[in-house]
Image (cartoon, rainbow, N blue to C red; front, side, top):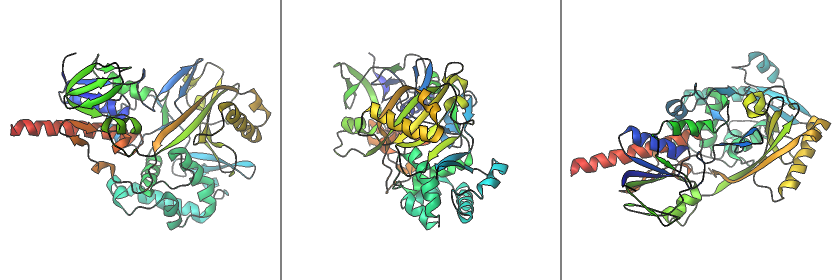
Length: 421
């Protein structure tokens, strides 16, 4: 294989966007992916005629990098109803976004999800975050999400009935020990835009990025086991040469390739998919568990967003469990069914289990301290750069940003060296 300018290791969102930016700037690129598929944790699996995203995932349309890197219109995005149905005290309670659902928002003022003062504080937090820039959010004093919410005066009721299950679905952290900076960045994105999925599943996002690359750049089933100046070594023993290397793999693999002894901690999640004759709810809304017991964290019905998720006439249901249960899949499914039967009645007995996804390294911990992702160093050596979760914050926004910024840094350094020479 001829020597190329840059090898990018990993075809997740960071690697794909890095490769695209390098190509745009005139560099030749080889994109090496260890598995048979692209997208990393963002993807959609076809299973018995159903489209199963790799765990419950969604795109925030307010993410600035998503707006820059993706053609959102071409993704045919389908938005969730803003707000949530929250289960506690034996029934469902609605928390609506009054700015986008004024009538439902009026009813929310008097719901037992939180006090009237809590609703006012949420409005003030929304206003404050929407008026703040991203740098302001990440550069302000940091604490945990739990401490930040209590500093703002939120009651135990709304923390336990909304913020805890909601943020457990976002960060897989029901303890709310996640950084206040990460929490405020994500809360700002939820307030500023829609939460949506492409009509054909989240896998459409990496597929769109790949489609923007020249043919022949991607090589799958090409696991890199070693790297050094001048190229990489594959598991097969093959040597692939390049002038520079960008590592865009997940944290454990990146630490191994870089020889780092400290591996960043992660949080996991589990998602169970069911097929049903009818959906358990009648609108595309996030359903949260605030009962304080049971394995379920949240539930969504993708087919209420797009019929492409399932064969005609069927409903697809996604149930998320925080963390990775110690019990096997059969026991976990039985526990989930028991809780869903309590919520939705005997119809749950007719749900057909399709598949369970266990994703142990779904997200970095994001416990304080969490630095401003814009300030992270991309270069490890004159020939070696890093992007992705390992050197940045998670979310689709920061994955895309880290890939682009690594490419920009590599090109700028290369141009400077050539100018000096």
